[in-house]
Length: 425
Image (cartoon, rainbow, N blue to C red):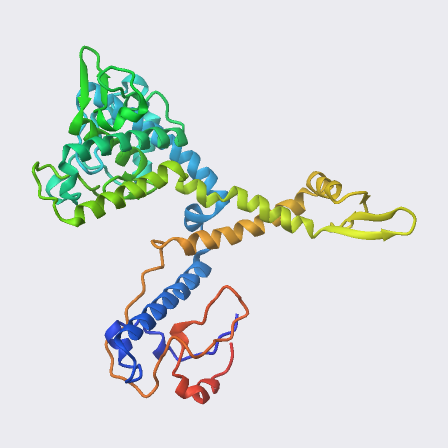
């Protein structure tokens, strides 16, 4: 990698918009200034993340977050954790001790000493290891973020209940969670056509040791919201899905008769429904997406095709040879060469697959807007110097095609001669 070397004075952080416009020409319009600043900020963060990735890419903690090979193990552990939490939560529900607060609650059934119903000491330890910190007994409801007031309307509660029921079923299936009583909803005890579901309130029967309780309406919805948050890391009203729940989820607005006459309510409902409908119809487990198995297989196969050699034989015509090192096998068709490569050259297959995985590793990290190393350090206010910085007009020399020009190293296009006076590195 080769960049023009600039003194550390010019690597002092991201400019604020106010600092940025001070170095622009006088005739730049406010709209163009805003557009240029967004380009500058995006480029700055991109290069900062690339530097951060290069610095930490060989560390296991970062690989566990983004590398396809590490993620397979992470997903297995995650699924076992989710099964343990789901088992504990359902037992609390049956015992009548489930806390519906918006935070992470260490339920009664998941405490040491309450090992009934198959809640083992392994499950206790698994939960503690996953959170890596003491689980709080209570979370203040008053400090939790609140959904739009329209979420308190009966029509919306019915819609959200049906939608969260569908999410519970889908996410449980993805993680191998079975026998969840919250997935066995019915509509007033009747078997009805699915087209009527939107006009009927679903109910769930919870059978305890000595009692049977019916969950419906807002109580069923709050239970489903709690389950999605603690088991699957889904903040339903916050429209987010994470590997595990942290902090407080959004809670339902609990005051009836809220004023929702403005268009904002309709926009919020449309955004909420669109987000979760996409997850239900086309969405996949976010961690499984990062593995990119199909993409890796296609890319590895394409790379493998470059090891098929096409040779003209005077007697029999075209033949196809194996291009692997120290291999002289020939075949009548390219598909036989590919089959031979897969069976007889596993080291080559592993090398090609690893190369593709490394590319996916980098893409996964760069595509995550919340990735570590992505928050820029802001530049401190300093007097303007006669050496200005602009995020465009200079193309920095780089041998890596995936790197854009580094906006932290740029000088003014008015000072190109001064820039060229610095040695290469």
